[in-house]
Image (cartoon, rainbow, N blue to C red; front, side, top):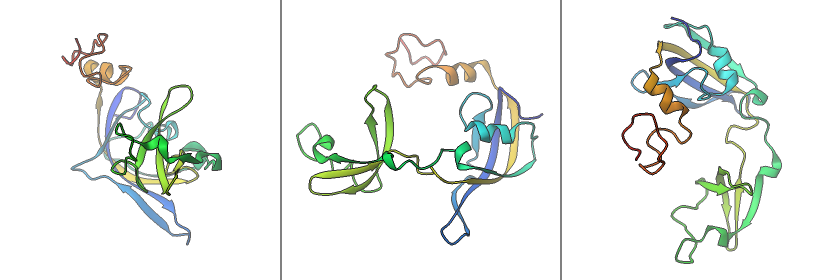
Length: 185
């Protein structure tokens, strides 16, 4: 069976970027016991990743590079923002140091109501510096791995993937789930 749209794929992989010294640095690794699993063509993976995997078969090895523009884009300096510390106060009017610290990923709301993830870069007495760029922005991504298995997606899986909030994430309050998960009212 070949990787094509609406196939569930299991694969192991190692992800590398180039370090400052020109040598590759491994950022991520999966194993056969805990593989990467995705449904091809459903937007679960980067489009260029899916394009590179299309047509491969179970047992095939892969080794390819996604240029930054085809992965998470170039690093945008405007994504680095300094915000007032009071934006990170908890319900008691105190700075939420348990959630907001250097290296933490925090949800932020855009002006149009979208939730984006930002990494905390610095915390001072009155400011918090965040980076809205993806951690891999500006990096060429080198993937090496092996296809473990390919199978058809089930109707239930496809409905769960395509549900606007994801199956079960509504905690039984969405009233419009037809995925059959039993968690919706």
